[in-house]
Amino acid sequence: MKKTQPDEQAYREMEEAVKELAAAGLIYDTGQRRWSERTKSYQVVWAAVPPENERS
Image 1: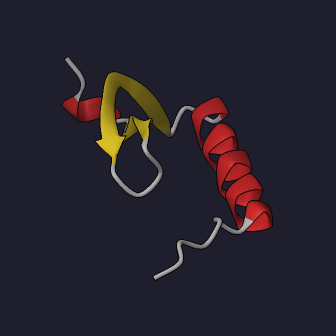
Image 2 (image 1 turned 120 degrees about the horizontal axis):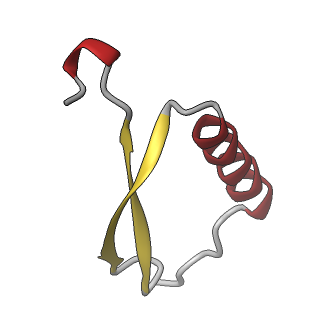
């Protein structure tokens, strides 16, 4: 079974969307990394910013 390369255009679009969400303050980098068997690399763990009334 042959592994296919990820669609480069889709990857770029996803990366741009993550940058836009982070710049808008809707998500943040948790500082955690997870190993991906599929890509054989560490992936950034992103999380949604909690609503203001739930922040400490």
